[in-house]
Length: 452
Image 1 (cartoon, rainbow, N blue to C red):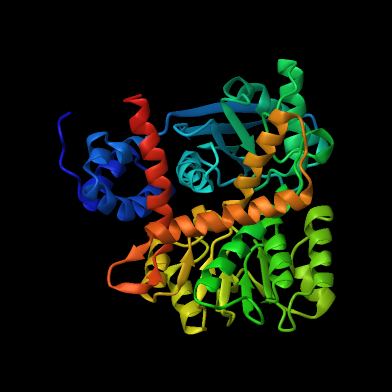
Image 2: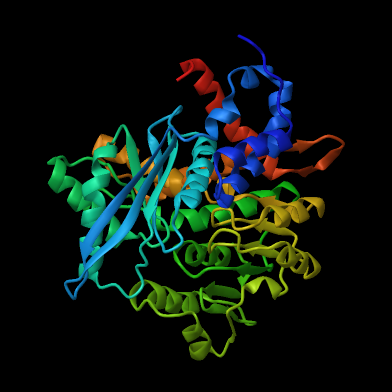
């Protein structure tokens, strides 16, 4: 095999930008991985011989389709749906479906690329994919959501299968949407198989799937702190978001003795100096999951501060859990967080920190866990749901809690193994560790399977 020169980061990114014009989120995600992985490729030429990084940055397939549906007034509505199947070297495609106005090909390609590494880090046999539609679910009735999900699945079903591609939920897609899509898949195919995860317990779901992403992010933080003989006990925690991930991150922070003081949504954030207690969290769950209200209502209920159209990164604290959306922490936010005493960050969302913010965290040598490692708990339990569906069984919650904790510990240890920095025995570059750890597993499988 002819050996090509390993490209510099600049050369690699220039080629990436040429092939993917107008896709900033995707280029950001690939560039962040390439920075850590290219050094490993130089030390292990077989990866360059097989052009592994270049192949990983080109999805197996990009599926785009029209979604037509009727709203409650009888008007015909048209949206665009996608499924990005990035890589299936280590298992069938696995990744969520997102319904949000910002969904486009760039966002989903970035998420599918990240998912490939995240799934590899779990140690479970799952490839990487992501899908969604540019629908805004806010203000839609249950009937409208049902009709949309049925139309969406009427096209997507032909690309899915329990051994082909198994989607889950994501932003804008929860148990309700998964149920409607599963019902439509079953109706079209006349098959009852585990082709979606995040299902209701009544029809093949798994205990702790809802909690897993938020719990996992806090477990990863706990493991980073344990490594230096510290804990969450008594630490002030800054949490963004107020959906599923943020809610369960707060729940686990409280269980481990931390003090969460913020939550947010698209309208702004609340700062509760007294701390968000278990009782206050129950209010948030009802507000967001049942009443679909705004986080400002929390401030009115409990007398907390509400900051409109702002993010919580100005609040002093020691541990940060960004659990909202991508690029919610800018370089200026990172500087503020560092000056306010943040010593560790665990990303509950996907790529919530910009590249510039990540660089600042790394330069400051704080503990920084990227999303592909810290928020892998959700897809880990999705993988366990797949196993339960295949065996036609449901494991007990206690067993799944143990498995989730073990998987997050293994992810941390894998990142630690690959994240060492020469001459700095006490510092772990978790970004490098996650990227190289995930890359090696997928790359070795790709080499073993030939040029396909």
